Image 1 (cartoon, rainbow, N blue to C red):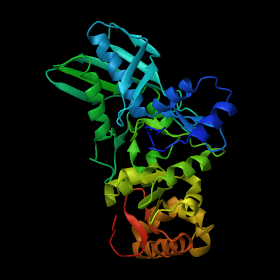
Image 2: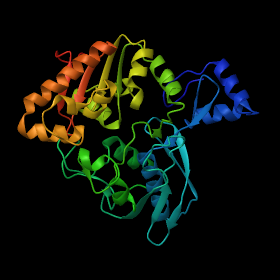
Image 3: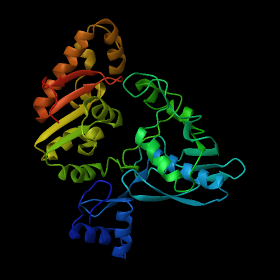
Image 4: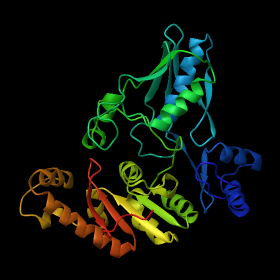
Length: 357
């Protein structure tokens, strides 16, 4: 049985163990959940539930709004995700008069998601052509390297996915406005403003699903993810470094996983011929258990503050420091290492030769 989201192959033994551990009476019920991309099976028999990204929620809300636009109201809406798996979500609220529909983000078993339970909404209105507009609570790109400065942070493949799902309902001119009523307030308490996304949240998600990144079970998830990648694997500390790896280095998206605080674990358990780590400045200090304040003769409150200060005053010293850390981490893990700052600039890498992905 193949997981349609990650491509992981579940053996008959793992499926039987999952059935027994979770007291599931029907194998067909479990296989149905696997086919829907909803669950991840662990080697010990536990089952973790995937969530749905802001991109998937926006697509569902957009299709629901389009249905209202043509005079139909639905309590549940099915869409096709970017990986081709169909997803059905409940509509949290709708306004027939204004052709507006909202869904709530379902983060599954990923307890660290800042966006869980927030509303993602869409409004449909007549327009000369098909057009998607970002409204209140959708983040705007303010720094180079993340896309077009001044544009809303809606990933291009998400725009394509929304259009394809909306056009299952109607053809011709319609404007879909995507908005998040709580987006601006929620984004203030995340890393988004510091990396250059202001005023709200991104509409993103490569597969349409949120992987269940829980500390208790994530090592098992990593075991599955790394086992299927035999040639070149990229391991990032988070979504931002993954994004930079893809956009700045043209690293293949289907060869990169997010490991969070378990990068060293992923490196140890990967059997890939070539390994590459993508990290941010504070994360590489954590991995090497280095206190950056012991290496500089001035005070600063965080690694982020150090980076922003030295970028303006002594950029070469900054690059030398993180270049040294990249080399140290490379020797420790036998992997190539890239350290990005919040703008996507490479502060340090090892080896120094150009990539060979």
